[in-house]
Length: 372
Ligand SMILES: [Mg+2]
Image 1 (cartoon, rainbow, N blue to C red):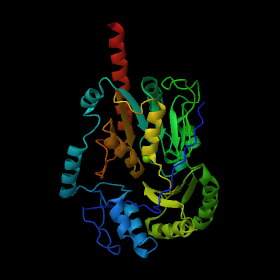
Image 2: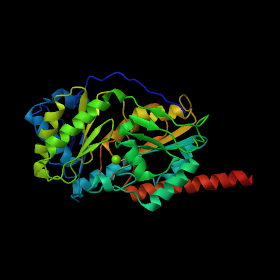
Image 3: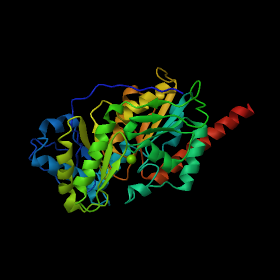
Image 4: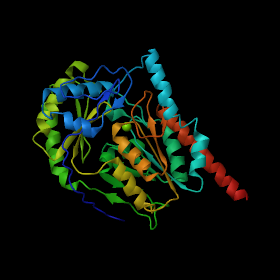
């Protein structure tokens, strides 16, 4: 078994927020409010946004509430301009199901490696995050997928929790946004030379701090009905799926009042969730690179990584794939969003169909090889 603790330098950024708005205008000052966002998404670059924000000012709260609203759409308004937006977005990020043949052609002669986010990708986003179960059919599909390709689940959740949802010992698991990585627990991996579990925990030193902040957040947010704090071991989530929209600013105030005492932690926002993470330079993209290296594909040109995810945090992985010029990202979304992914799928059911087609293609090609 490999037991590797990776130490990474701290970043100086304490707070990073991505804001989704209805058009492409960038706020010139922090006081400017973004327009209402009925469904379209254009994100402001993190650099510009940080430059303009007063971290502890009131405008930050407003911007964050608007961002929460925009990133948690519940319906799609069919105004003509949005239909046009959707059409042009789909031209740039076509359905991975419709482009299946082209995708397979691009992977010819290369080893496909699968990376899958969990919430909103394999399981639907449900009101109670503890009940985000995936379907039996999805589990069966994942099992077949892992027989065909090295497969990793990459999630913001605690690794143990994701494992309890997925319950497949043959997969790789990267929990806490990739800060807790483990390889297949049963019988090692057929892909990694020598087998055995990979272990990477670059934020171990933050464990006591995360526990402390977890307790404080529970205490501080208990007056906000519906708020749910989740301890993901190396990071924390404050779910606002069940919090009334008029209470969102109050919730942010509560979270920020805790976080401001911890400059080594940063606050980001995902799909119906606020995330609190150590300020280390480690994310889902780094986890993807770590896993590729662990699988022996560090400097290989014959690898074809495919990453499927639905959240802002998955963009780090999409970006790495673009930079490497290898494989591609698939964004799971019903709505246009600014993304580094190349293709799109609308919902977990479409993800399952795509994975199933990959399995069928692989089984067919193995059958053809065997008959030659
Ligand atoms: Mg997700």
